[in-house]
Structures are given as structure tokens and as C-alpha cells.
Length: 345
Image (tube, rainbow, N blue to C red; front, side):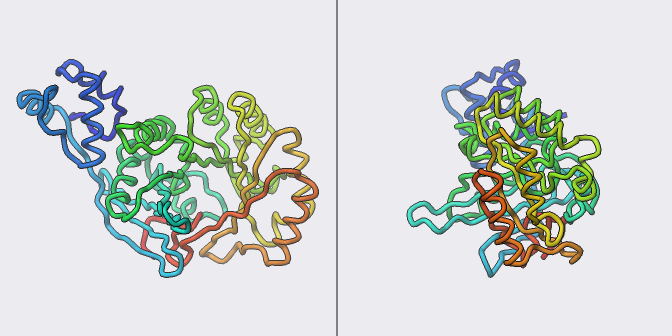
């Protein structure tokens, strides 16, 4: 089997190809060339024609196929449908941050799996079921392909597309390292966000390994019974144990924990919901990200303006933590959070 480039960090490439005469410096050159130009580096002092020919026989540069691209006329969010190894298809979204003159950039929302096994009640991806894990190169190449199609640089990456990233831990962490390497895509680790529905063993491993990426945990309800109905992950990853894991994460990292809350009208936006959240997280520094539910089936609806205002007022009084309402763009092209289902708009 050939060695797949874009699937290993430069350090891993050096280890894998040292027997062929690849130095650490050349490994960095190789990674830079394959992620930026899709080819091996030019001949030079540490890459002879003979070594290059050998690398051509030992390695392969895999590429995703872009199947579809849809741009929202409302907010400029762009959804891509990619085809990976074996014909599997999955989606990614390019998020525009073009409001600051002189700092025009994008954030890439990438997938880590084909489909998802988590089965969250309000998520179109969860209704697909699980296909397979993506390889590290398939994650990296989503960003590579979006960058090649973009007039401005991609400066951030969020693992909020299809799949649960902590259930594809090794490939996701390898991809994060490649994305953040100076010889990779040079996206700062602090500008990479990993979003999970609360896989406790993965959070504890992430904590122990002290990764530089940011962690966001989707809670959505502080009532374990209600949370189990909305997020079946609660069954094996109970809320109280999850909060304990987040306390450990904060103790090790020193970071405020970002908690995501998908707001659903009549379900989890009441004063009692705010109180339960405050009780659950007391003593744990958090930031709460509020996001409207996006459910194409129509079963779940976002809160009304009155519900939203009342909920924010209750949070302000009871929670004592920063609360941010996060914009969920691309709804018109089914590119918003919870709407990716491996197809077109």
C-alpha cells in the first residue's frame, strides 16, 4: 500500500520515510508542497532526482473530488459536497467573515465522518446514520479544496460538520496537527475548534494530551431525562459525569469551557432551564453559545423573539457567565448547523 501524503504530519512522514533517505527538513518540504500545490517539492539540495523517483513509487497524493458547490445568495455561506475514498460523499461549509475591512477571511466547517451515529433528534446528519470515519487526509483536503476556491484566506477551522469528531479521534487530531503546522496550512491551533456532543473518554484524552485546539461541548439541556430524548449520547455519557470531565479540562487547561445550547421553542428555553444550567455548572467557568435549532423536518422550531428575550434575561440573572447568540448561516442552502445530510440544497 502506498503512503498517503496529507495523511501524516511532517514528523510522522519523517519517521515513515527515513529509510528512503527523507530528512526532517525534507519531510516538512514534502508536506508543504502537497497541501499547497498538490505535488512533490521541486528538486533541490535535499531532494535529488533519484530520491524523488523513489518517493513517486512509495507515496500517493490523494485528492477529494468536488461534486457540488452551492452559494447562499442571502449570506454568502458556501456548501461543498465532496467525494472521498471509495465514493463516500460528505459536506463542508465555507463561512465568510468579510465584515472587517483589511481582515477579509473565511472559516472552514469540516466533517469528520460520513453521516453520524449520535442520532440527535433535531439533526439531519444524525438521521442519516453512520457511514464511516474520514481519514486525516480527507479532513485536511476539505480545507485545501475550499482554500483553493477562495479569494481570501481560511484562518479558522471548526469541526461542526458531519460526524462526531471524538469518535474519530486519531484521524481528527492528526488533521488538526497538519492544519496548524507552519509547513502545513499554518492555521493557528487556537483558531481550530472541535465540537462534541459529549464523548467523555474523548474529552479526557483531549485534556490529558493538552491539545491547543478549542473545545466546544453541545449540552442543549441540563435535565438528563430531557437530554437523553434530544441527545441519545446521554445514555452512555451522563450529564453529571460530563460536567466532571469538563471541570477536569478547565483545571488542566485553564480555559473557560464553551457550552453550546441548541434552542428549541417550548422545550429548553424556559426560566427553569436557565436555573438548571446554572446549578449544573456552578463553579465551572463557561461561555454559553446559543444557536437556533435548524430542523428541515419542521418537528423542532427555534424560539420566538419573546422566548429568546426571556431566556436571555433568565440566563443573565441566574448564570453569571458570558452568553453569545451564534449566527447559523446558510439555512437557505441547508448548510446551517444540523442540516448537513450529504446532498444538495
